[in-house]
Length: 99
Image (cartoon, rainbow, N blue to C red; front, side, top):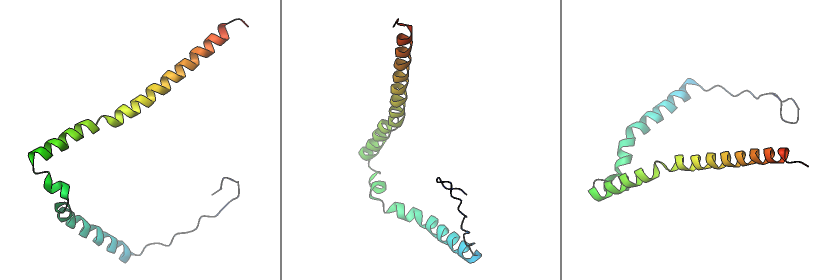
């Protein structure tokens, strides 16, 4: 592997995980997955969402926030497109005008 300066550098070998360690991680993930429903019951937002007014608020908030990333990205693309187009027109105008 080469660094940006062009100096070659050897990759350091990572020690292999033992099967016991991998089983321990799998068991930890299993326990966390089984506890997830109980953790969500402790969530103040999840419990209070049983009220009709709160549900309507969550729904309206979701409807408002869902298109926002598309609007932001679309605005950036439109701005860049307009800027590129105006730069192209300026180049055309400057090349066609007599000097």
